[in-house]
Image (cartoon, rainbow, N blue to C red; front, side, top):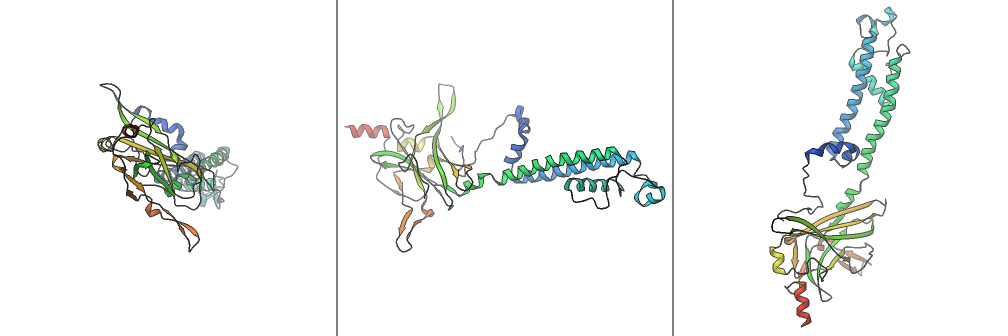
Length: 331
């Protein structure tokens, strides 16, 4: 693979081209708006409200036109002489009906413009606008609320180490990377899943991508309280997809390792997911991470230095694969 499937910031480097189903997005317009960029959401927000005001402004203008309210002798300044009763008072043209439509929608009070009982169709149009505008406003405000309360921004404070390392731990080769959270509020029930993505050749003509999960543990535990940055460890044993890969194979290999961090936000209980990936350029063979946590005796607390999240040092590590290393140890 020449390009990453998942960028370092967790964004997918995937473009879905399926023109036959591109209109299926509109079947879930709410989710489309929630997932859209803010600029498109705001543009649609303003455009939708303006279209609603224009639509009902046109309806009120059309009613006034057919009723004769826009004739010169029936305009507001002549109504006292002609004793004319309009559908809506103080309407001079489309601008007036547009402003009346805005007043009905926003319930800012009518002022000089107000309906009369002369035209039942105007009463019906006003009631219809009130009902539809309530649903419409709730729908649009719901989109903004859903975007504002999404936990996506929470992932910005979840940091992965820029590199992963392969080194010896407890006499076994291990693939290790680190993840930490710079916020004081904690992530609960954390879980980290690791997958290897590689190009598999099933026969002479067919190539396809395959995903294989790498069984991993966090700091050697099944469950972890996320106090400070943790190390995610995958033991390269017989069940590992990295079992037959040596340091030389890694340099010329075409693999990508995906890391997915999941948990619950302590303050809201919402699920959060952060992602990153490591290619062969990001994996350091024969390195280990330095310690980030120090006990500050003078200040009586533990000091976590996030500048060391990706800092490594070289250590003695066999360059052979995990399979070859086990054979050597059996001799």
